[in-house]
Length: 263
Image (cartoon, rainbow, N blue to C red):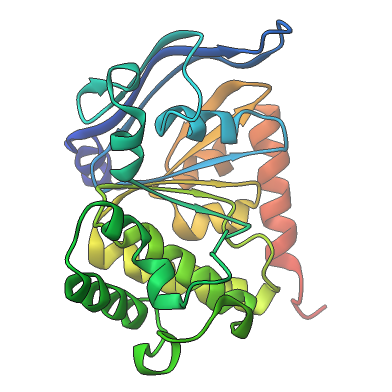
């Protein structure tokens, strides 16, 4: 691995930091244990792991859907518990698998929800929505006045990404956003998303259980198991790791590469 790559990662200004963070349910079950992590500004960190590994818990701590049981989560230099939760969430775009578009609003209106809450003028909201539609590969003239039911799953997912970007937040969280798409659409939107990230330079935290997706999108991968971070590094480090969980995911990656090869 080129040492300049590590220098570029290490030189990034920290956008998000976890300092010895744990999250424990009232029942006593630990969902996250002693997580220490820094996410550089403009970096795409992929949180990889099986169901129940702590990926979504980690993400919910960033936008204060939950608060840590111990330790600190710091966003833009300030602990999340010191942020007003609504103000924090308006600074963070959020994209999920079930996109949650409002069925009674047009696509343009859906994208403009947060800017309207922020008090933007109507003309500015409309212009921003149309700009973002074109950015995510949907012709604004064709799609702005449609309703969610008139779009395909892949098109709705693009609208979800556009809505997350609408108020130009510095941080974007994505929780398995492409998981419900068919394989061909998923591959296409992954490539479009990667190009979009390179163009915009946002800080992104992306949750997935798909190692191939992690390799396409992540500048670094954080591998979680049973609430603990067992590996954090560039994709090649996961393939080279001797940790049993890393080896299990690496085997899935190699098996996926083998599919379709001629005998």
